[in-house]
Image (cartoon, rainbow, N blue to C red):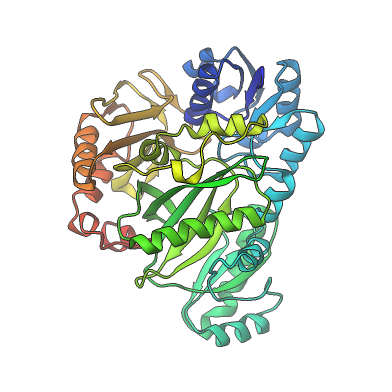
Length: 446
């Protein structure tokens, strides 16, 4: 087992990793930018180093400074969290070359699955359904038109690198395609430094379902069931739940088994998420792999009773998974609401600033993962998430009721948050009765 782990991240996920390490008897090294200097969670680490100025590019994305902090701090492993450098294969390789263990997959598997086009090819080889589309990257408008005519409109243009909705455009007819292609390629180049795009059949009114997997370095792979992440705004998830409430049992089994096959084919180890879209007939199609821990991992932890961060660390240290597939049950229903410092009534405008008062909800089946506290100043430089509110109850109806109670109990003064918007979602008949898709929020509530 490791002696010291450096967390190459900030905020809630850094605190989450610190807690898991403490329970495993591992010392921790934190990093921080000048914007995060003085944050209380840093006091829980055994050592902390400043890695630069407030902007991410000047701090949390500075590979050289992070490696230096790990070496000076005596860390023998690095946990990347999510976001920032967590899916950067070059960073992963630099960590390995520095004789430090990266708590995640190998750089080779990360690079292979991080490219959506090569990931599609692996999925096909593993007999995992993929959305009909181009055989590779689109090289010209003429090729795009020919492919679109073959698979039929509407079509979706997608960047082969990155995520979060960047480098994506929908063309509903041929006259729109060339302009949409140019926009997607330009946005992908600006966001990811890679203009490569491919074409897919656009699945209308899909649900977004993802499967949590974990694999060790000894060839053992298991799934930890699935999460429904269909409640989104502009491709950004708002609410996640497990199990997915609309999947027939045979489809649920098939989608989870497909995720395991793909991960085995990629020779992947550590935690990861295999993402799918599901159409109204319950046909599912692979879309991408997130080669890291996800923001929404707590809903899986609640229904399975498995601490994913601890398992990540143990797997990275070379331990075998302590359970087999038959041992992993899914009990009850868990729901997570992302609490962001944003104003839901003003197009989700970011609301950085000082939290004057804060009261965290509690009670049976309630979990609040947050690094924020009264007096904490939310900086304007990073993702606006300040916490995750998770509930776990025997049934979905009880979980919804519990979440509404917890949201009402949550008190944050001084800044606006998305808590009130979550109440609108959770009380809407469409959401309660599962009549939603990934565009439902934008169609119905905005």
